[in-house]
Length: 284
Image (cartoon, rainbow, N blue to C red; front, side, top):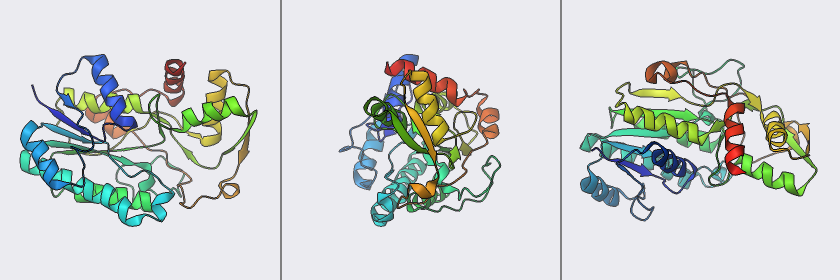
């Protein structure tokens, strides 16, 4: 039985991978603690690879504090680029397949058509830039790799937009939410399912892919759906991005086309609203 090492096991996607693996009865996934699996410690990583001889390494570890990254450029780059480089190098040496998680923030977000993998990446934030740099170091070091760009992750695990809205919705009767940023919410359980599917089927369709749920929405409409489906009587007020200034600039439009991943892995992807309903049911 082959082994899969999961890095960033305690984060949202790491917890979702553990949950889906248990549901499916998948064996061989190893979720080492961060002290053992620090992606910035090449010597420790080498020991881990030598011990487990993994067939796959899933990199869920990332610096994701988008606004803080504008001030902590070196740290964001260390985690998002150098960490990915460390894992890719070892995957290449040990013959393992690397599954790297990336982001829609690699795009400028100035268009209005769903983005395909060959569209120009032009990040407008430090977070987006360092995640793109992480993507770029991988191919030369690990020929067997999948890079999955995703967006607006949420689940019943860890902190995320859905759980924040539910908390605020119980405290307030009105919330102001941005309506002029458009993208696709992604249920991290669905993304975990996609990752485990490519491992389970031993896919060799290596390369760069986009994965989010189907459809598109704004943060305002997403929040409105959360309150509607959860039965919370909250009034949502749409505001422009300019009315809610943040240190990092976000893409205004980052809807991704999923045709490539659906065809390569022969999967169907749920609509974001259906997956949101599933998540809210589990949270209740």
